[in-house]
Structures are given as C-alpha cells and as structure tokens.
Image (spheres, rainbow, N blue to C red):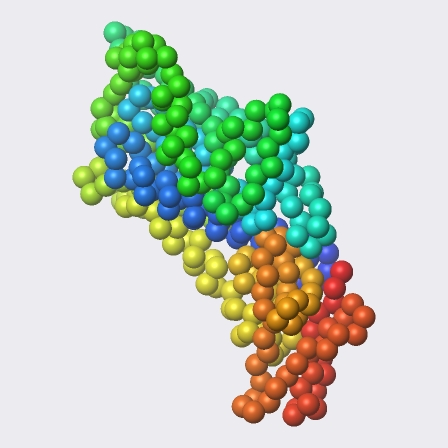
Length: 340
C-alpha cells in the first residue's frame, strides 16, 4: 500500500494514501495507550497483557488493540481510537469525529459496536482453548469493553445514551477499579472464591491466544505480550517471536520513521506532509506565524519549511487555491500544492 501511495496516481493512490495515513494515526494512538496499560499492568503477577492480537474463527475476524486478562477470569477488551480534536456521541449512540478544517463533526463507525464484534469472536475462540476447571466444570471468562481515546481529546457525551465505556486512556486503571468497587461485596467474594486462578494459569491462557494470532494481509505489528522477567518462558522458537517484555510498539515507530519529514521532501515539490501521521490529505492555511498545513486525517498542524541551496530563501506564494514554491535566487517557480 505504501508503494502505491508513492508511485501510483489517480483515485486508487489517493485512497491508498488516506487509508495508510489513518492506519498510521491509529498505530500512534495504540502506542500511547499501550504505554499506559503496560505502566499499570505489565509487571503485575495478577494480569496478562496482549497488544495487537488478530484472531480468525469460522470466517470472522477480530483485531483487538489491547487485551487484559486477570486471575478472576475477566477479559478487558480495549479499543484505541486516535482523535486529535475530539469526538461527540449522540443520544442515539452515533459516534462523530471533529473535522478541524471543515469545523464540523463527521460520522464514523461505532467503536463500541466494533468491540462487541471483537468480543463475540474472542468468546468463541476462548471456547476452543484449554481452560481451568473447578469440580470438573470448565471455568468461563467474563468480558468487559472499553474504548480508549487520547488524554487530550475532548469527549462530548450524551445525557441518556450510556457512553461510560468510552474513556481517556490515562483513566483505565481507575475505571477498572471502579468496576470492582461497584460489585456487590458478597457476590464479589463468592465470584472470587469460585473463579480465581493462579498467575501461571492466566499467562498460559494468554500464551494460547498469542499462538493463535493471524497476521493481517497488510504489514502490522505482531501480537506481543507485556510480561515480567519470570513470566512466560517460550518452549519453541515460534512462540518466542510472539512473546516480548513490556511492549514498546517498535514496529509502529519503524513505520513512522520510514517516511521522510516534510522539510526533507519539500525541494522535490511533492507537497506538504503531516508531521504526525504523514498524510498528504489536507489544506494549506494561514495563521499567526504564516502558512501551515492542516491534516484532514488526524487534524494536526505542520509548519511549511523549504530547503534550497545555501543563501537561497525560497518562499510560498498563493494564487487562488494553488500554492507555488518560488525561489528568486534560483529563478524557479513550481506548483507545490492545491487546496481542495
């Protein structure tokens, strides 16, 4: 897909570039959430953490951003969403993201419903695993869902529709504890006595899931587990490639580093590029400090800077909705970008 965006032309290349930019922005949001999750749970003997788990079962697929499993046989399925400007949830449960360029909200698929589909696949996959038993009966997992957004993002919540499962990523520990605290004390004690398992059992279940990871057709990070030094010791080379110490999301950084920064590409007049998600989708605007590029994918602003020969001072010239890179010293003028 990245090769298509670089060498292709027409609508196919344009759609591929936008799709790739959205995926890269999503990876950035996942990496931020993964850090906060690992900070609280990676070293805990009571929890197992899996990132970027992709499961296939009976023709259905679940791409799970983050999965937390604890000794009380609870699975927290977490979906990360990268909203730079914010989201709005209507009374009907419709999700809308803010478009900073158009200054309006745009519809988007519901991440809550998306996570419900992920849980449906995960539940079916869990039924195929070797799970612990009590008195000859198989212990089943319970499932909880959360949608994580950036700590800096704004969330406009409805009054009636229950949007309590949409939280900021730095609130995950507090919300999980709130779930535990809100449970009836007697019922909680009975549940704990009936279902609690060892930390080794939790890690064994997590490892079974990691072994079932099926990579997507496009390049994405492999499923990784955030574990402590003494947690899982892989018995085969194949398993060792799936198990890691606290995940750093290095693959996501590698994808990001593969694209040169805007300043390095400006001399070839390929147009502006978002500093956050590397998209070319957006518009050039003028602000307090001059012209800048505003991305319509992640809504980040990128300063426009040109490079040329030593002593040359290229500048941006506007003509209608077109922008040209002019250099008086070189005597050159090239079309740099056209606003939509």
